[in-house]
Image (cartoon, rainbow, N blue to C red; front, side, top):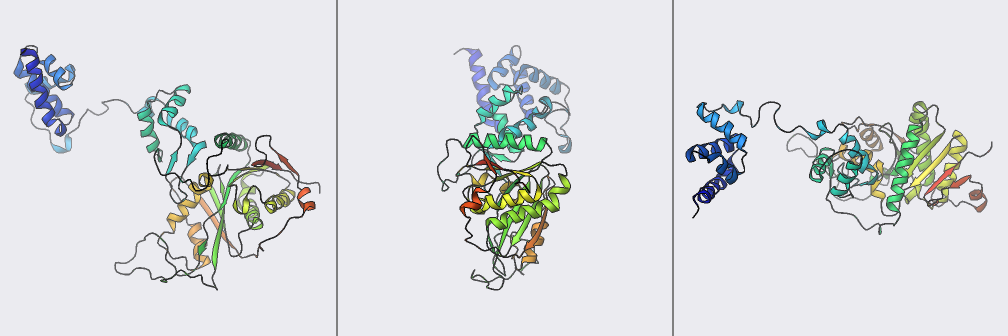
Length: 408
């Protein structure tokens, strides 16, 4: 057998046996020791057998020649300070911002979790970043997405229906309009009803800190308390300012209640922040009290537009995407985490727990009780509906429309 290849094979076998236990320094010293034993030409042979670079082996030979004592545990480093490849976030300035903007229009997720995931593939994202001038491999895209709090694999909910063929186009339209509206100094709000909650000493999923052996006592059966009833939280999330408003209703979840919540948000939070606003943009699900087919929703928005003397632009999320609503991930998920394991024993407790919700990103939430009666089943007459000053977008006018104030 060729002596040259025989040496390489033996070194490779010895190296592969212990490679799993070697850090970079020990790899270097192992390779240098083998090269020293072989003598002339040993560096080349060992480099071929182990994959350790010739330069690293020469550094190891110098270390062996210097007979350096063992390095104390607290001083061990794989590289010198500042050594190694620079982080891509330093070499490609702005890549995280570009990545966030790239995947944000198409993010989806579980409303009870702050974790987000995206439906774009890693290679697609890498290619789109390259078109923007960023050199990022697709494996590195995965690392950056995890750093931003994303995951690229998760169970997908499909019970809401099949994907609409214009789903992505609608999200891109919403994203474009959102940017333009915020840049113009106008508010963009995401609205929705949070899951209705039983009020009383009922079990609430999750755990919280209590003295050992003293769990919170709750009722065995979840039968509604006739005196306390249910809580209907309806939320408004201001995308531009990362703030939220939640009205806790005690009656029916109707379009009148939804628009009243928007009204309260405007006078309490919106108007002071957007004093020069000329319009309000609303993103909402396609169903529920703010559904795209709900006549009362449009009529109540018309009344609000008349009252505020502002145009109201509405964009509904396409079918099957209600869990993608911004308010689900940026507000409701954190409220759920804040009150986990805490029985919602009264409306006051619910309001306080909602108002006490914060995040590291600076989320601020305001909440109040709305005990107004909102009758269900209100019908909108043809005359009332025709009086609505509605202008529908050329692209899916049933999803995208504007309601202008009527003449006084």
